[in-house]
Image (cartoon, one colour):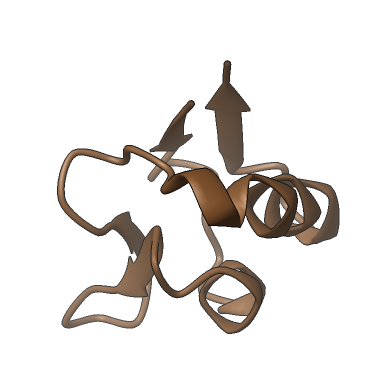
Length: 64
């Protein structure tokens, strides 16, 4: 599973980082970015999906 962030949609709420810090982080301006290449660790698939569902701007996604 891989995650992605659409930087043009992110409004820096940080919900994704709160829910799945192994995949998402905040950049120096407070916007979401990926940890590494966005590969979701096996034990964090549910958290990554929860982060996608919770993003108010629909700026993140995951692909199996």
